[in-house]
Image (cartoon, rainbow, N blue to C red; front, side, top):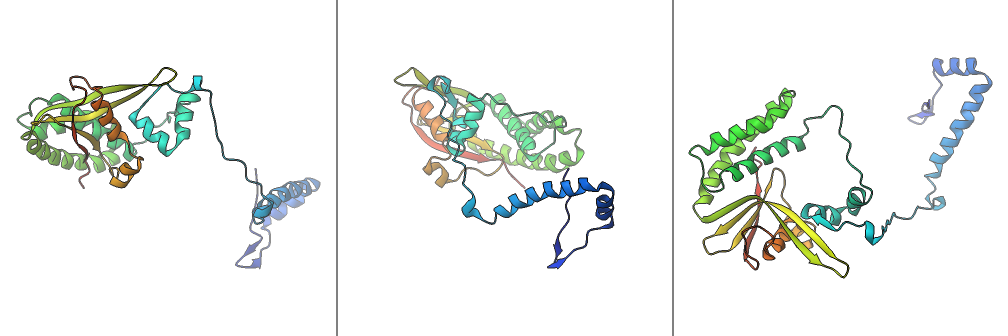
Length: 274
């Protein structure tokens, strides 16, 4: 335990409280020892004001042997790798797992997951033909996924009306979109094996939606419930998810899509309607 009090307030020296004075009187010699131990912490703090005496530790640079490195990554992992390589080191080399809180919280990220799941399931269920009541079907799927918020009425009261608005918008967008496309594949898994000097590296990904246009070209979609990646991020290679999925498609890595197929567009669908 560390007990501290301000030495000065607005430049004026302070007087220890009665509580501090009583502790000093009762502790006797032990109080002097405690003060000495506290002086060590104060000395370390004051050293921060003299950076010339601080020798920075070298930047961590883990270099695991090749045998320990992953033989494959998902397109999402590749993006994490580019932005923060240590996430890949922790996940695939150290095999660390994120701890699960004992009392889960209905954080916005969880609500976004429910929205994404409902839209994804709708696209998968009705990839061939739209139902008579797209909004009703979407809201029904939303109720199923939002059931996890039943114990959090405040969070549900905030997110459910938002999902209803998203469902209405998405149904209109789907109805307009279906009139111009030949086929849809939803939640489709793909993979592409890259030959290396020592074995192969497998790139995998699950595309939220792939459309085939009437001219035979393809459009790859990624559903987002928040801000999409910017064009600059994509051009700089910091947001490679869709471009990597396009590479998998070009290599024939998605079922029923021939190798060498043309990719006409890469599209983010922003499901965020306030």
